[in-house]
Image (cartoon, rainbow, N blue to C red; front, side, top):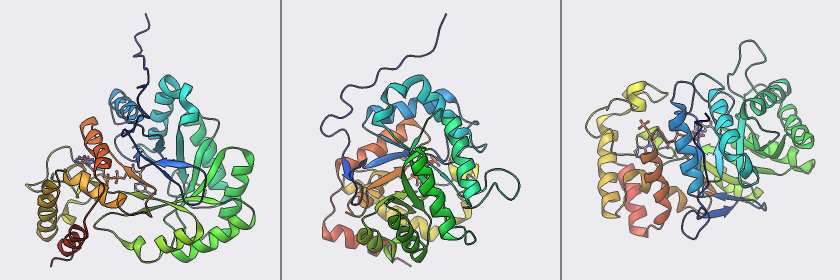
Amino acid sequence: MNCKPTYTANPDRYADGMMKYRQCGASGIKMPEISLGMWWHFGGINAYEESREKVLFAFDHGVTCFDLANNYGPPYGTAEETFGKIFDENLRGHRHELMITTKAGYDMWPGPYGIGSSRKMLMTSLDESLQRMKLDYVDIFYSHRYDGFTPIEETMQALIDIVHSGKALYVGLSNYPADKLAAAAEYLEAQHVHPLIYQGKYNMLVRDVEEKHIALLSKLGIGMTAFSPLAEGVLTDKYLNGIPDGTRAALKHHLKPETITPRLLAKINALNSMAAERGQSLAQMATAWLLSRQSTTSVIIGSRTVEQLSDSLNAIRNTRFTGEELIKIDQILAMQ
Ligand SMILES: NC(=O)c1ccc[n+]([C@@H]2O[C@H](COP(=O)([O-])OP(=O)(O)OC[C@H]3O[C@@H](n4cnc5c(N)ncnc54)[C@H](OP(=O)(O)O)[C@@H]3O)[C@@H](O)[C@H]2O)c1
């Protein structure tokens, strides 16, 4: 007997108000205001059924973009395997509705070729990602970082050749210093491959991209996705009374508990009160704050549970801030 759960997509997933879509830079492609990232909570250590439920919940609510990388898990590669299984069993018939992304550049396999932004790394890694995800092509292939070593020309030529091979429709860049981003874009444009999108860390607590990247991206017609919008969970109410079990700080999943200082918590507390006045959770307000910026094409959220996902998706209901609210947020963030 076949006990596989069957899936029928929500017929109202594109109905008015379910999700909103924004033009990506100067391109013809639209991205959902919220994308689902699979860095944590979708790996081999996680229950497959929970991962499946979150991906399909997102798709049913108009999320068309799923963000992966070769080494998401843990263990490395297993988030792509999870996605591949979910895709194969449920979403293959919807392939043309999906923007599926992956990346290469950080450590992936042992030895000198398993890390960095060389041609060998990018090409080999993408082939393995496609196998794990059971895909013929990804929509966006990102150079995950400028590695400080590989010549920009080598990395960009590999991306161009990948697009020409049909294994990726678009090219993205992530974690590039502004000057390297400009050089990369110039090389790509010279060969008629427009860099579609830049992926950078951007949230109320980490605003480096505001210095140089945002103006440059706008000038170059490149879209921008913001990752870690909740500062890995810090921009929520969860740490106001200690470190709860199961959270990233408790599990030491990248987020170091010692970064959650009393001074930081005073700011979070004040932001939390402001969010309540707006009728939002702090997670929603932090995401809405990013979406209130025209420069943001999409916010990539991470979700441990379907409840968190549902809460975060509702951020799109109110992305307007008054001038006074924006000033108050800056004042809270500047508190000593
Ligand atoms: N390009 C890059 O280098 C790069 C780097 C990092 C991330 N990314 C991408 O960005 C995605 C998102 O990053 P991220 O996971 O750091 O994002 P995030 O949204 O800042 O953090 C996600 C964490 O926030 C908490 N959370 C989420 N929604 C919540 C809600 N509604 N209420 C309360 N808590 C909530 C959960 O923490 P708990 O688990 O503690 O409950 C969750 O694990 C990644 O999956 C990946 O696709 C890219």
